[in-house]
Length: 392
Image (cartoon, rainbow, N blue to C red; front, side, top):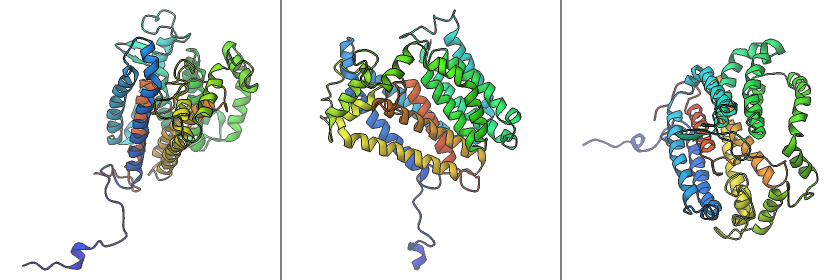
């Protein structure tokens, strides 16, 4: 008969969390768990925000949430694949991703491609090629991967504007210019912010960005004060100056937040979705959360996003190499920048834009791209401090 020794039943060494199945450490499991929580909450909220809108169009009340659910399944499959694929493989895909993004963006703005890139609400932002794709969303991941790849190569030259930052500016200008031509200035700003944050983290000089900012100021001034954008800026600077025109959406958004109070009016009981707040299921879904779930609800949502961002930057700081760290920064910033801008617009802290709230707003292209970016972040987290892939 065998003898059971104490060492056979008692752990030896420092205590550690059990294997999550996603690799060593808790960060990957935490990111995945938070993603599922926010995604599930997003689908529930989207149903409430879109059901009346769908019925008014003669559709089923579950039309939009069903379509979003399909996008979620595709996005989760992309997340799992990207989490499984070693993140270093993305370096080889940097230029192909940029090339594909540029071609898709070109198809959206060329004058003879209206058949596959129709004008919707005054903009040509979508390609219809059997499925509907928003090329500017693909461009976000392309910029993250390409900027991280090039930053590793150009890091020794960042003291020189021409040899360091110059190559980035040419590619960024091409992609951002095509996105702006759609027109989609808000997404162009997000793409620019992602590229700048990655290169800044890699060691680019602040003085170079200040100099370049001064150079592009005239063009930026022209873009911001063109037609409808000027109206939005004027409304933002003079709150409630046009309550029935350009300021209508923001005013209704604030009414939604005010109606929600501390605990909200209750799930499904929101009134703003009954034709008062346009795009309640998309650009202003944060206001719907505030109305139905109240201050407590939006606090929980903000805490979830803050947790995702903090863990994402922790993953970046613990990455085994510069490329992994920059990829993690880019993917985390994708969530942080969009969430911050979307919430700021809903609270009248920023001019109105058409940015989605990650994992919650309706929009399958944005949802799939966000989940793919989270998959890349998890791939970085799965890599041990020694640079070897952790196996479940």
